[in-house]
Structure formats: C-alpha cells, structure tokens
Image (tube, rainbow, N blue to C red; front, top):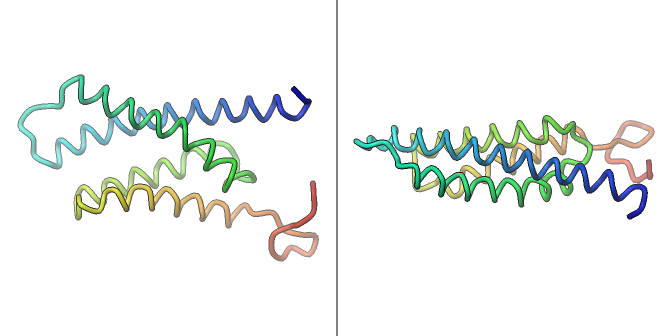
Length: 137
C-alpha cells in the first residue's frame, strides 16, 4: 500500500462508519416519528426497528463514502456527515407531514441538495479567487 493510499483508506472507513451510525440513528428517529405521525395505536416492534436500522445503516455505509469522495472532498469532515444527514431528516419530516407519497423523492433530494450546496461553498478557487482551481495542490 502506498503512502497516500493508507490515510485515504482510513478516512473512507471512518466516513463509512459514521455514515452507518448516522443511518442507524436516523432510522430510529424516523421509525418513531413515522409511527406517531401516522397515528398508529401500537408502538413499532423491535423487529421493525431492527429492519429499518439495518437498511438505513447499510445505505449510510455505502453511500456516505461515495458522496463524500465525489462531491465533498474539500468540505470539513463533520460538515460532510452532519449537514446532509440533517437535510435528509428535514426532507423526510416534510414528506411525512405534508405529502408521504413524495418521501422517496424529498429525502434523497434534500441530501443531494445539501451536498451540492456544500460543494459550491467549499469548492477550490484558483489564484485569482474565481472559479474552481485546475491546479494540483
């Protein structure tokens, strides 16, 4: 393994771990809130929580590093994790309250919009301070 590959692999593993944890916590919150908003009489069972945690943690572990390395390379790590997760949570809550049918569009759309915004704010600029830098650095 080359000198630069090892730190990149460690950062990728950290992003994947944090994405999985964020996905699991999001699943817990969304399962609870979805049940409350839907007006269900009974609380969701442990099986429902485990299923949702498994799905959301897997999605966070797989897509967290992809999103971070493709769109968010120049963004501080904590913002890479926190802002898209909070945007996804907000998009989900808006969908649950106003239009549950739009959940598959609003939640991922909010995450991607947040990542795009971070990419625009933290993009590298050239020596004149205009536009993205094409220089290696």
